[in-house]
Image 1 (spheres, rainbow, N blue to C red):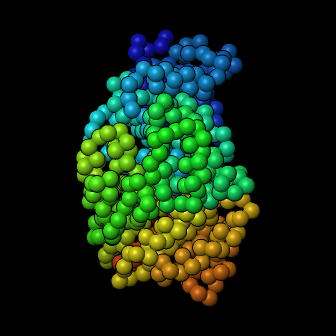
Image 2: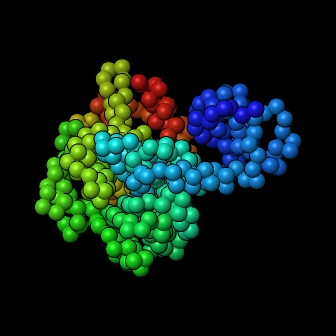
Image 3: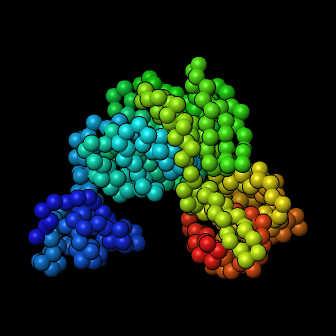
Length: 445
């Protein structure tokens, strides 16, 4: 028998809450149906399962049987979206989606009840799950939308139906699935197709595909288009940005108003993310000064620029955790952060393969040479077969170690680390550098 009241929705038995509905999603690696019994044991009020599976399941289990649990989750998402009067924001981009989503969330939470995507739940199951979880009394909803291929954003944004669509930037990410960067821009522009009537578009101005995005929005007869970023011609523009002891600071001009904003992160990209959040507030007619003040709480999430103190026996070292993912744009941004950090002692780089770059991959790895040399590293540890291209370019110019995998990198760093060192770790998910960060945290927390 199902619970009298379902209090939420989950697809993961590791974090399920009693009386939640467990949705058995079949993915590439796991089938949620294999965990139905475990979910019920942990207190799930019922499980949403496929008819085919239910025919052989125990009759004692509280089941809701449907043809396809994922399609059923999408219908729950549609119902949740339809019942709320919330103002909805959808965010995509080649780089900075999750960080921008967090900046927007932090800003809007200072104004009203805000529901936002967690972690990087931005794909074909993450978006409907986050929508289905949205409370009826939500005032602001913030959703991240990702893609690897064309035609992936379109169905997701039609579920979200945002009032504001944000594109942070377009870069050479997932190139193996596209002919060129303009193809990526076209795929990102799919986010415009789900806009509510009189919806607004906000575009990061600091990339080469801005005009292509503006043209596509105009083709769709979207009349409210604004830009934000470092470009002096942007509608909402950053000026006088500088690094300070606690992070970044600068001025943001919105019409006749100039705001000083501070972000407790290193790197110019953090200021751009903050500018996006304040631009959202401006588009919603909110007091942008409140959102600007909220950026003081915009701390980098794990894997995206988080700074970790490593407590060594004779002093502290610093770990810059950029391990969540990597592409040429974000890699250069991270290397730029390292370049700007002055250290009395060594800088050590752990750089992993940048994946999904297609035929251009060897060249794009080689082209990191100047940025790596400019960062001021005493040593770099390169991880993955693609990084061999960069290793060959650095030979004789920088103390370089190349490993085929990340398996022994934490041990190597343990042997190397000394008080005062700065270590930056960055690579694509598939390079598995996040466990290296976890191991270092465990050893030196």
